[in-house]
Image 1 (cartoon, one colour):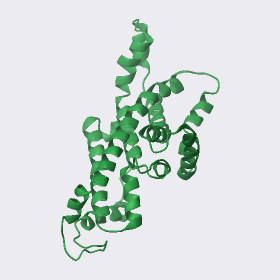
Image 2 (cartoon, rainbow, N blue to C red; image 1 turned 90 degrees about the vertical axis):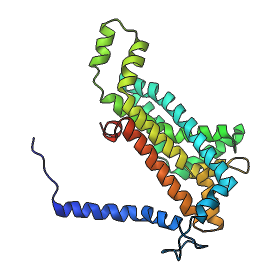
Image 3 (tube, one colour; image 1 turned 60 degrees about the vertical axis):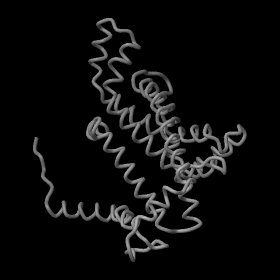
Image 4 (tube, helix red, strand yellow; image 1 turned 30 degrees about the vertical axis):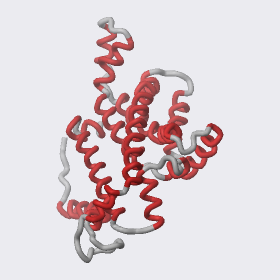
Length: 264
C-alpha cells in the first residue's frame, strides 16, 4: 500500500489555518491576566485580580457546581440509555428500525432555538421549568443522539466473532452482552461519555429557556454577565473552561487513546 506524504506547502497551509482558527481561543489567556477594568488587547498591565474576582463570585461558583453536577448526571444517563439502544439498533433486524433511529437522532437536525422553545412549551405544562429534573431531561434530548450515534458506529464496526464464540460455548445473552460486548465497546463508551459531558456542560440556548432565579448554569450566568458588563472576568472563566475541556480530552487520551476512542 502506497503512502502519500503531505507536501511542505500543504503542511504550512494547514498550520496557518490552525493558527487562524485557534487565535481567538489563545487570546483568551492573555486577556484573562489583564489588570484593566474593561476588555482590551493588549492589556495595559498584568494581574490575576479577575481570577480572584471569579473565585469570590458566589453566584458563578454555584452555577459552576450546578453545571458540573448536571453534566455528570446527564452523561451517566445518556450512556445507560444509549448502550442498549445502540445494541438494539445495530444487532436486531425489525421493521421500522431505520425510522426509529432517525427519530431518536432528529434533535441533531433541529435548530437549537426551535428545540428549546418546544421543550419550554412541553415542560411548562409539567412544572419542570427552573428545576434540576427539567434541565436533566432537556439536556438528555440533546446528548442522547450524540451518544447513540457514536455507540452505534462503534458497535457496527466490532468483530462479532467473539460474541458468536461466547454463544457457541453456552453463554447466555446477558452474559455475552456484559462480559463480551460492553468491554469491546469501552472505547466508544469513553468517547460518547466525553462528548455528552462537554455538550451538556456547554449547552446555553436550551438552558436559557429553562433556568430562572432558583437555578442557573455557568454558561447562562456568563451570558447574563456579558449582557450587563464586559470585563476580563469573562476571559478568566473562559480560560478555565478551555482547560477543563483539555482535561477531559487528556483523560480520554490516557484512558483509551484518542485514536481508539474517536476513530474506528
